[in-house]
Length: 80
Image (cartoon, rainbow, N blue to C red; front, side, top):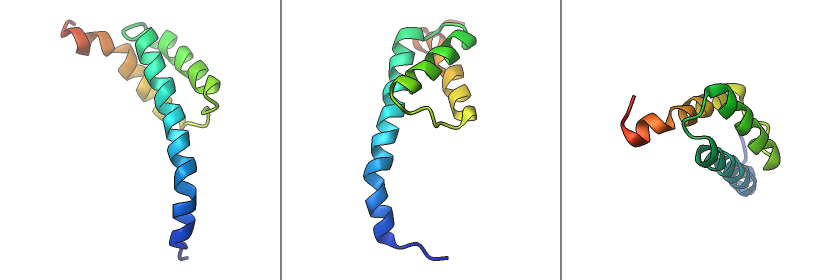
């Protein structure tokens, strides 16, 4: 099944806009909850994604981002 290249070009602006929403939610959560416990970060990230109308993110991706944000203080300060 071949896909028309013009369909790709038509969909890219919507994909880019959606990814920008996800990025804003992740950045906001990283800024406000970096280094906090995973459960707290996960909940804040889910809420931020909902606020951006970007809640259709694969759960494993949300979990990965939440882990990274929870571990932020260690990577930023170099402390463990």
